[in-house]
Image (cartoon, rainbow, N blue to C red):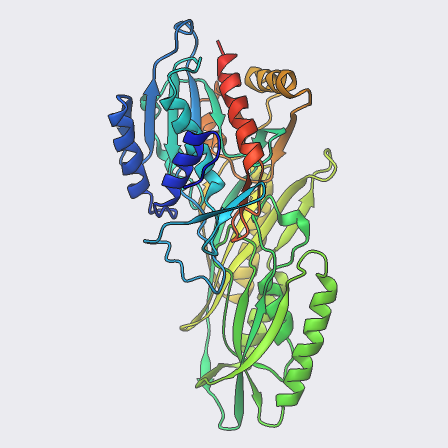
Length: 476
């Protein structure tokens, strides 16, 4: 048990982390919270998607106040190190404390995104000593995959017009807008041929890159393991048998591997080539990926891709939009649009890629998707788009944002700055349902989302919980 303050926040966080909750597998955690809410005597509803709406009446003196929605998502991105044996379908995430940081003790992502938001809301609901307006707590599903939870929740289940989303990861920052985006599946049939008897086979590995959130970390120059694998195999002396890299389109790929063939007698050539490329990669990423490694090991295979199809794969990755597409011309340092090639699989008769496009404007999203369409047409690939979401446009007159900044300033003597995030935020879905909604997103300091390095600051968790409690007190 974590013996940390505030005790109930960390208690709920630890309890939630015991329950597997990959996107699409939220029923167990939703059922757990629903049972808890009913035991507490709250008005609680679970819809057909496993979204939850839990209501608590106002504290004394707030009977005339308008309701406030606290909102977080139940699912998490399930990432783990190559060495981890963790099974995200059944194993609890165990936690460890290192100084000011809480992280996973089993080589996985932590689930603070967005388990800490869920824990905040549960602790607030439970505490009868707090001053607050009528509360409507909304816990959604599938935020990390398709946004189906927020997209499909019925507005008949709640009536609040003020929504505090608890899915941000920087304490002195209030999110007041977000990008739109879309998932991409890209598939191309491939042809293999029997490997020649004189072929020698090796597995090539790219490992130890930093990875991270495919939107919020896209500007950090951490590299993409898929692109590095392609650079490794570009040489015409190298035949490709298979490839697999990345684990999720919303995470920048950290690791990958491929099986290749060279003619017997070319083994030293391949070793020298891999060593040369490894030195180049380590030089290029000495700061952004200091643990980067490239290695090779002997293996066996029966087939190789025909040369023309290997060339197609190289060309597709060369041309597929990846990384920053455009910076914001009005706000220095802010990404306007990007695309992340998150996974690649070469095998079983096909190339299969997944990617995520993000942009401040849906017109820019469409522009990137048009480029992908052109690429698919050139190579004869099939492309499908899914999980689309709209931008959350900045409202300069947001009373909720201005009040949050005022309370933060009064509490801590420092400014809380506004930001439009290069990530999809569920506030956009709620505002699309009701344009009269006033929304913000806040939360404690967390780092390395969507990776096994994910961690959460204890001091910041304490600070921001106090802030959320005080903000509710000021929302009469």
